Amino acid sequence: MRTIKAIFIKQACDTLKNWMVLIQFILFPIMALIMTVLIAKPADDIPNSMFVTMFAAMYAGMTPLVTVASVIAEDKEHKSLRFLVIAGVKPQEYLLGISGFVLTVGLIVAVLFGLIGGFGGVEFVKFVLVLTLGSVASAILGATIGVISKNQQVATATVTPVFMILAFSPMFAEFNETISKMTSFLYTRQVSMLVNDFDMSLTEPVLIVLANIAVVFVLFVVAYRKKGLRI
Amino acid sequence: MIKMTNIVKRFGAQTVLSEVSFETKYKEIFGLLGPSGAGKTTIINILTNQLSQDSGTHAIGVTPFETGLMLDEDGLYPRLSCIENLNVFADIYGMPHKKSLEVLKSVGLEDAVKKAVNTLSRGMRQRLALARAILHEPKLLFLDEPTSGLDPGTARGIHRLILSLRDKGATIFLTTHNMDEAVKLCDRVALLHKGKIVEHGGPADICMRHNAMKTVPDLEAVFINMTGTALQ
Image (cartoon, rainbow over all chains, first blue to last red):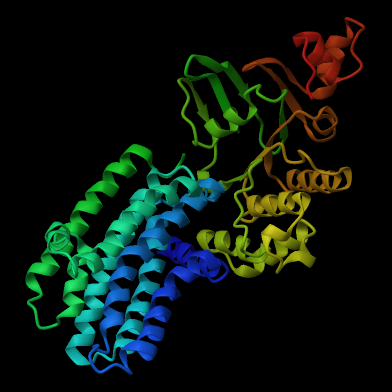
C-alpha cells in the first residue's frame, strides 16, 4: 500500500507540471461548460445536458486511455521505471498507483461533468457510476498500450486510432444507424446511451461495459506476460 | 560480497560475456575497467537482476533492498524537482522526507532543492542520481560510469563522496574506462576486454606484476599490453 501511495503521489506531482497530460483532464469539462453556457442554455430546443453527455462520453473513451498509455510509455522511455523496479516496486503496484491516480481524477471530473449538466439525485449517481466504469475500461486499455509500447512516440501512434474510434463513434452513431449497430458493443457507445437516457434499464449496458472491462483486462494480462514493464 | 562464477551472456550470435568470474570483498571499492562495449554494463545488469545470464551463477550477499544503483541513464523524473524526485523513493523505502534533504546536501545540491530536473546541468543530474542511489544507505552500491562526461571539478566531488561512502562501510562496485579514476578510487580492479576478465587485483599489484616486463608505468599500459586496445 505504501508503494502504491508513493507512485500515486509521484503521478499527482508530475501531472500538475505536465500540461500535455493535464489538458486531457480539463479540456472536455471546459468544452462542455462553454458549450452549455453559450449554446444549450440560451436555446429552447436543445437540452441543457446535451453537450455534457456528448463530451463526457468522449472523455471516458479518450482521457484515461491516452493518459495511462503515455505515462507508462514515458516512464519506460526515461528509464524511470527501471529504478522503481530495482527499488522493489512490483509491477502491479506501479500500475495500480498510476491507474488509481488517473481514475481518482476521472472520478472528480465525472462529478464536475455531473454538476455542469445539472443532474440531481439518482441521475447524478448513475452518471458518475457509468462514466467511472467507462474510465476503468479505458485505463486498462491504456495500460495495455503502455506496456506494449517502447516509447511515447509508439504509444501515441498506437493510441490515436484507438481513441478516435472509441471517443467519436458514439457521436457518429447518433446520425447513422449502421454505425450505431456496429458500435453497440463498445463501452463508449453504452456510456453515451446511458448518459443520454437515464430512464433506460441499467442491466444490459452495464453488462456490456463489464464485458468490455473483462476483454481489455485479458488483453492487458496477455500483453503484460509477453512484454512486462521492462523494454 | 559479490560472487560471479563462469557467467556467459549472449545477445543473439554475439557472446558479450565469456566465462566471467570474480569476487568482491566487504567494504571495498571494486572497479571493473574496460573500454566501451567490453560488457561492463551487462555485468551490472546481471548482478541487479535486470538481465539473466545464459549460464553461470552470481550472488550479491545482500537483499535487493540493500543495494543502490546509479546508471549512465539517470531515470530521473524531468518535471519534478530534486527533492520531489528523492521523496518518491523515500516514500517507497518508508523513510522520512528530511532524509531526502540530508542526502541532497551531502551531494552538494542544497541550492537546487526545488529546481526541476530538466533545468539541471549534466553534472547536477549525475549528483542527483547518486543521491537517489544512496538515499536508503545501501550496503552495496553499483555505479556505472559515475563520472562519465563530467567536468574535473564535479568528478572530484563525486570521487570524494564515493570514498566517504566506502569509509562509512558501503561496498562499492563501479565500472569505468577512466584509468586515473580507477587508481584513485579502487581497492581492487578487474580488467575486462571483449567480455573476458584479462587481469585482476589491486591496481599497484597489477602494475608490479607487469613491471617485471619493464614496460609498465600504469594500468593503462597494462591494458594496452594485454589487449592491444586503449581503454578510452
